Structure formats: C-alpha cells, structure tokens
Amino acid sequence: MNAAGGPATGSDFAIPAAMKAWVLGNPGELKAAQKPVPAPKRAEVLVRIDAVAICATDLEVIERGSPALIEGGLPFNKNFTPGHEYMGTVVALGPGVDEYRIGQRVAVEIHAGCGQCKRCREGMYTSCLNYGLNYGKLDKGHRANGFTTDGGFCEYQVNNINTLVAIADDMSDEEATLVVTAGTAMYGLTELGGLVAGESVVVTGPGPIGLLGVAVAKALGASPVMLTGTRDNRLRIGLELGADHVINARNENAVDAVRRFNGGKGVDYVLECSGAPNAVNEAIRMVNRGGKVCLAAFPHGETPVDVAHIVRNNIYLYGIRGEGKSATHRAEAFMSQKRFDATKIHTHTFPLDDLPTAIRYAKERIDDAIKVVVKARGVAAHRVAAE
Ligand SMILES: [Zn+2]
Ligand SMILES: [Zn+2]
Image (cartoon, rainbow, N blue to C red; front, side):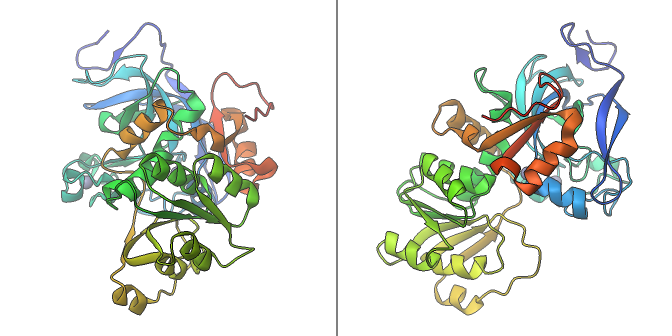
C-alpha cells in the first residue's frame, strides 16, 4: 500500500499510532512513556526494533549526558530516548525507497551523517561536519541514533537507508546487535588504519569493542594478535575469539610482555579500548617505530602524552568515533561467514519493560555481564536468559 506519497506498508506488520518508549529525565532517571510512531520520509524506512544492546556509552549518556547532544545541550528532561545498538525488521518504506523490502531484518548503524558535508562525502559520516545540527536546521538531515536524535530504547524508529545492514537469516537478533560493534573495530583497523594480513596487533581493554577487535583483527589475518586486560574471565573470551596471547596487566608489565611476544620490536598496531589514564603512553611503547595507535575509548579526564616519544618514533595516533565507511557491511560478512562467534560476548537478555534492570546488570557487571540486550517481544518478564 502506498497512499499518495505516504510510506509503503505491508499487511503482515500492523503499525500502531503510539509505542512504548523510555525517555531520559534527570541524570540517571529513565521513565516509561508513550510516543507517536514516527513516519519514514524520503530515503528512510521505519524499523520495528527487535533487539537493542546496551553500550557503555549509553551508561555515560544516561548518567552524565555527554556525548549526547540534544537541542545543542545536555539531553536531560527533553523527552529524549537513548539507545543506539539496535537491529530490527523493516515495516514501512519512505517515498522512493526500493533498496530494502518490508519484512527484511537489518542491523542499524548509529550515524546517518548529513550526506552533504565534506566528511560525509568521504564516507566518514561519524565525523559529519553538521553533527548535532538537526535542531533548528532540520534540513541538514543529520541523525545519530541515541546521541542527537531519538534512539532505540523503544519499539520503532525511522532510519536512513544508508545506515542499514541486511543480516543473514540465520543470525540471531542478539548477534545482529553486535554488527555495529564489530564494524567499529573494523573501521579503526582497516578503513582508517590500513591493516593488512600478517601485521601484528595489540588490543588494550577487553570490553565489547576490544573483544570484537581481537576477533576482527584475527579474521583479517593479523598475526600475532594480543589482548591486554585485568580480568581473567574477559581475557579467556579473548582467547576464544582468536587472541594468540593474552596479558593480565595486574600480573606483569603489559609493555614488556607485548615486546617479548613480538620479537622485542613492538607491534604494528594498537587498538586502545581501555580509556585508562596511562593507556596512550603504554600504547605508544607497545608499537614499533612507524606503528599506529587507534584510540577507541572515551577517557574521563585529560590525558598526559609523551609527544617526544611519538615524534622520535614516527608513530601515528588517531581517534575514531563509531563506525564509518560502511565497515559494518564487512563486519556482517565476517559474522555471517562464521569467521568468529560474536555471541560469545552476549551474556543476558531482558524484556524492554525491564530496561532499568538490564542497565544495572550492564553497569555493575552483575553475573559477569558483558553485552546485555533488551527485546520488546519474545522475552518473558523477569526471566534472565544467559547464553
Ligand atoms: Zn555503542
Ligand atoms: Zn555530514
């Protein structure tokens, strides 16, 4: 059906006028609310959200506000719905959309960018020069789900087709929420870093991006791949995802261990995912001369850096924000080809109605939680399904 320029919908998916949505009140306060179901415009589809993973950045947004930017400021008490790592089913097509079909399962990238600035034209839409200008300048069309526009802790959301990644039929909803996480590691290592097979990689910090960074690096042919961290249970998962060596920084000097495992010269790349205060100075000593350090974590404070060491050794230091250059499509290809099992980092699923409990599990790492997923349908209330 396509009523004169309106969205095309399918009879299999009745779309209600209103939906459940969580909104951010004061810092740390999520409130259950009802919101209208948005309608897709040109180049957009309506996605029924089937699963959304909780990210450490969501916890930052809910507690501290930043890096979300709503109406040019902090996101509190603005009827804002956070959540950015979601997947779902296409249930309505905006005018002119034939790239996706009703009923298709998709993972959703966070950043749509504006599509018209220099960085968007280069494929670096997470670094859009019009970032956050979707208030007051609506025609800029910029979206970043759960950061500058409403996100995924609700039942439906509109998304630009350029942010969609079609997922394999046999990929579970939970695994599909991890496509963007794997795509972020991919973007840092290949599109921005230029990693080629046979180069050596250290990942510092075994959070979700770090663990999938190990898996992606290994799938790309990096050798050896090492992982540093302070928790043995996380390091063990790193081994299962392909790390050749893991280093517990509580037990030994991580820089010395990295150099020992790679012939004394250091590695070609460090993917820094810990955000620890000394992480940059350690990373620049883990790489060899001319090596590259990709910074993927948000530290809380300013970080002193030994610039002279970087200059003397021709080291490249670069930050990444999220996914870019459609790296998620390549990550999804690795996942659908079973090159690594991303579900090893999914630990818990809760119903959408229990979002505050799910957030507590993620924040306090209750029951060794790593990736906690919430689903609007198909999960019994108060049942914790661990894999
Ligand atoms: Zn995230
Ligand atoms: Zn842009």
